[in-house]
Image: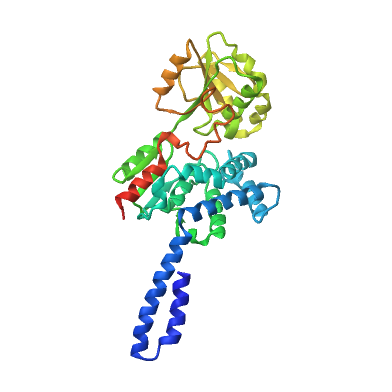
Length: 389
């Protein structure tokens, strides 16, 4: 620690001669060590963590504004490099994700969120949290990263090979803002170990491996989920256009992307197409186009009914999940019935519609909108209270 090392050098020079002086040196060094610990703790209290992350948000926002800001040029290069690592991480999609992160990292948001957890202001035993990030959309694990550090815990993170750079880059900016965070997080590429609790996000297939390897530890293990939208028939043009963002952002790869639309009986689904034409350019993406062609061929071969906009396939189906380039739809008789069906479906991440997540906002969750409805911050605080370590 900086304060401790400076104290040691000073004391050694002043008290190195006699035995009495060496005793005085030991006492003084101990006092300096206590002083250093107090200073370090004061720097890393909740208010300081909130301040650091709010500065991160402002710095990120400034850097995304052209080449402005201290990190503008390096951030632009990072964004352009991502598509070479993951074909779905186009510059526009990476920018969209980073802008969403910057928008939530305000002092007001962070204070409102953390004010719900009085224990955050108490001195607790930090736990070492092993994080395994998914790689379906850019920086998708940022909320977990934020939750671990805002609560004063230690992070051991394993980024996805499909998204290895974005969160470590943001962490470096955070450490430049507040160097104390250098000691709070470590990013690894190998085997995850030396942790107390685990938060792992992946596919239904990978979750089985997570259960096998991490089941004996306190854990949160997330699987595939999808989101749905309810159209009641009274939506205005802006709301129906905004629904397109919920469907097409990130090519529909996020768990908060709408993969199914519920429609009232008699609703003319083709009337929606004109509102989504602004997203037709997605068909020019090689990966998306391959999915579109493949799914269309399967439906034709199997003689299944579907609607084709030229860039999106719509299929009447009671399944919540749909493949890339496809949106399922289903008609309902009453709102009560459809809400009952949705509430019983454990695979639904969020619901878009009136009296639900506003149209166009599915990929802009608040800090207190937890994935799978599991309060990650409360989970960690309970482990702090249990004194794991």
